[in-house]
Length: 110
Image (tube, rainbow, N blue to C red; front, top):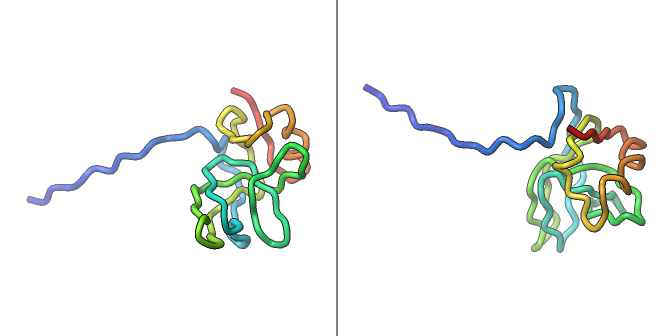
């Protein structure tokens, strides 16, 4: 008789729907530790947290520790997310909503 183990995972509500496009071409820049759902900018081929005064490029789909050097993780290229689950860094959903739409990322409320 074999005993199967159990897998426990935490469901998050970041992604809304099934129609998303992801990528992992660009690394998170050295010196950053980022979390799933964090709004990011792309500068000189590397991702880093985006401030409200900057243009967002994507939303992270993985936690990435790049504190010791550039590191890769998945990020959203196109899709819909629940805005209450997004980490807007020092900003808010209102400040990033239109700019994210410009890069094919739609935020919606519940």
